[in-house]
Length: 75
Image (cartoon, rainbow, N blue to C red; front, side):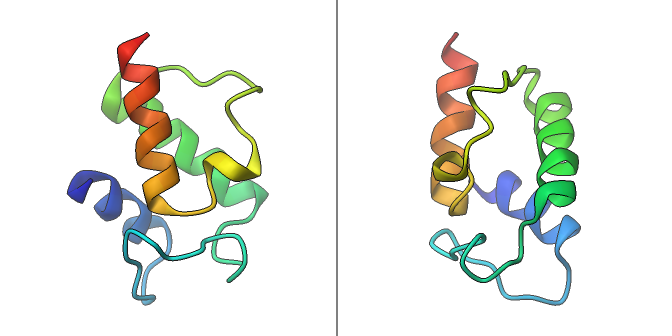
């Protein structure tokens, strides 16, 4: 989770982001940032997202993103 938080904080600097920060409600994560984040996560964790994975509920909070990454790593 710490590694994921660092990646997100690198994309969204100068904002306090915790595991439960609502990235969508607070408009911290938009479509461009989501594309950048998915590319970084794919590279860092050696996973591949499909369009079915990239839905709002999977990117609502860092906790949700972490759960998605864990699922993808198990595939």
